[in-house]
Length: 345
Ligand SMILES: O=P(O)(O)OC[C@H]1O[C@](O)(COP(=O)(O)O)[C@@H](O)[C@@H]1O
Ligand SMILES: [Mg+2]
Ligand SMILES: [Mg+2]
Image: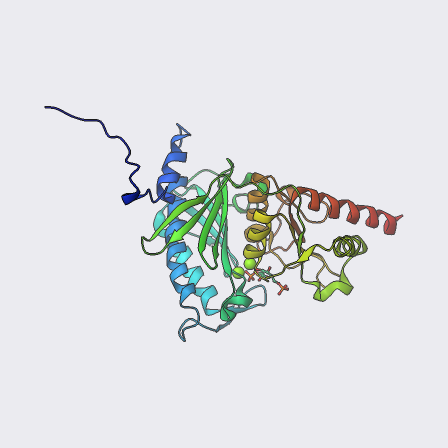
């Protein structure tokens, strides 16, 4: 029997659609001979939930999705319907996937113990980021952090399984529901971005090996509480203005972070005299983006300390966040340190 060997066709008639997320996860898993495939399955589960939530965000203006849900979460924030929908969708996908033993969610006061005796992973998630922008049709997102539990699989969940510093993350990422929908993630071997092709229902590799510019000319901060900013930060912002940098602030952390990661820039949600720990949450906002930032050659601090080295002490604890191009974060950090030393002196 005569056979012929496959040769890839470069015919323009059927251009290659690219590498799907599922195929990419499989390819990357093969890089690790001892990989068991559980993390890969978990990433695929997140990809599936992202597709469903994407469909809901596209319909966010329609009556049954728009507006407040009528509950307040532990942050004291009014939950939007889409916050609740996204929380249900991701929690369900993570539960059904079978790889997760516990979930920490912005929308749940307590840790969700999935009583899954074979689950190795703990997931911290902000199901819907940028909630204040849902009803005004501005980009929103989802943020996730993945850890391996530290106590034996099958044993009851312990605080040390949850309260892990960000440097212990085995994977992290975000979904951006914007003009296009993207999923960006890292497993500690670089950062890759995928764009959703709704007609095929697939995420395709569109941003391989993302690297942040070392420096930038964009700063993202809500200056509404400027009068409560510390001197070092004010000095930094005055410098940005003297240098005529661009002020860009969407009010959706994922969207502001993504833009600055691609173009070079810094996002700041500082401590203020009114909220001394800032607004953003360490476990399911700052840690994930800090891991991505560092994997893309950028950095993240709380004004002084590396975000990934902060030892968590409570589920919904907040942290100031200075994240973005390495030179900009270094500069603002140095100014804050210098001015704090002066006030202490
Ligand atoms: O309105 P503010 O104070 O500028 O805060 C905006 C920030 O708060 C957030 O909306 C907080 O996230 P959630 O929407 O998930 O609660 C960030 O996405 C955003 O960067
Ligand atoms: Mg958020
Ligand atoms: Mg949220």
